[in-house]
Image (cartoon, rainbow over all chains, first blue to last red; front, top):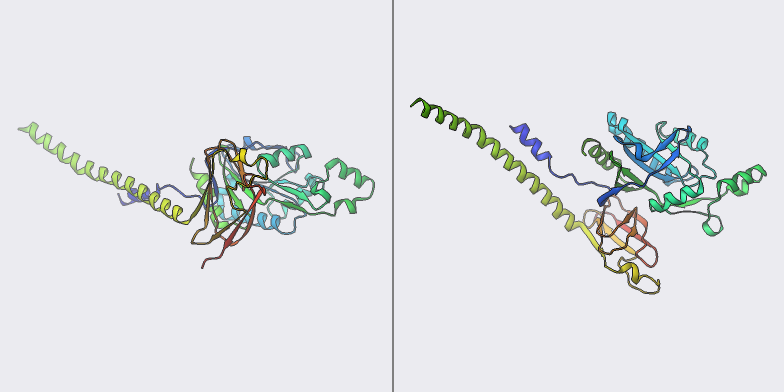
Length: 204
Length: 137
């Protein structure tokens, strides 16, 4: 009886520590090839929780910090990590080719999924997820993939690649049924993220 | 006589088993509600709540109209007032922080670490808002 009563007590509503939007809504879909050329579709991840991040490989601070934290989340989740997908969409597709992104992510965790969108797709994703990303180039414009390739072909890539990207640094959490449930700013405590994700993995 | 005895035994069993189970169920339900009430109280006490008023999206155009639903700088303090809650009472969606908040939706964010957090905020004429989180006093 005591055990049963204890279980009742645990039935109290869980309070998420990340940013919550209520009522929850469906996550905008993300459908792109990953760093290995395999198709990735967010809406086809049923059964897994997805942590989605927008960043770039030349980022000096926010992205490495965030990816290290996400690696920590996977480690602390233990076996539950088998049902967690960590996905990074680059906001700098001109430099972050699938190969570059793949090598970068492997330094943190080889299970991380890297997606390199074309400019139009990236613009749509930025609108969908409320992401801002501006380069340090005049006007804040991002070099397009085609323009960058042309520049590199011309052997003038040094000038073309020397820029930083100011970007929103937020980790989104999509639950097992595809609902956009949580958001964490960079630097959010790993333990808090682990608790939230573990709850989503074990509760519908 | 035997029937009465059987009825008494059944009644006794019913009371012996039913009462504890009923009590446990009632206690569990009360405990759940009590814990939720405590969390709600904590949330209310620690939250800075903003409501995007009805018609805000129209009043911000043109941008010179200085109707501001959200202060461009919001200051919170860990452990004292560390939660931001934004409810959109407008019919048009607003983009605040990580989310597009449709009409009727509420965004709640608890901050656990001090720092400066710049957010997109389309319901502010400056198109942005900065949350400054101060350390625990």
